[in-house]
Image 1 (cartoon, helix red, strand yellow):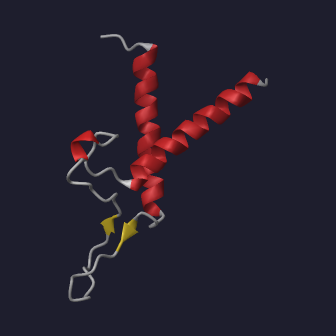
Image 2 (cartoon, one colour):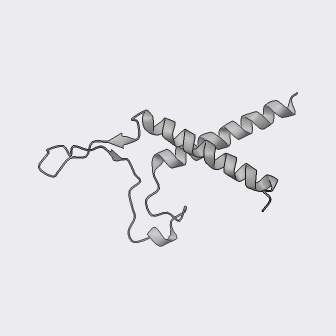
Length: 92
């Protein structure tokens, strides 16, 4: 099986997304300490997530029910990085 350019670009993009997500998670910005109704903190931090509109979740875009902020931000960062690199390469 030979890898095509598209395969290697997809693999590279996934690798970069994983690295971005790891770096963003390490910042601690994407976790929250949840509390019980009694006000006592839950000991383990949880990832922040979008609220779910249960009546319209099937129509929601993107089609994930609980997209995490960190994944969305990593995708946006990677797109921004790719845009900047293409701009720099075009100016050379």
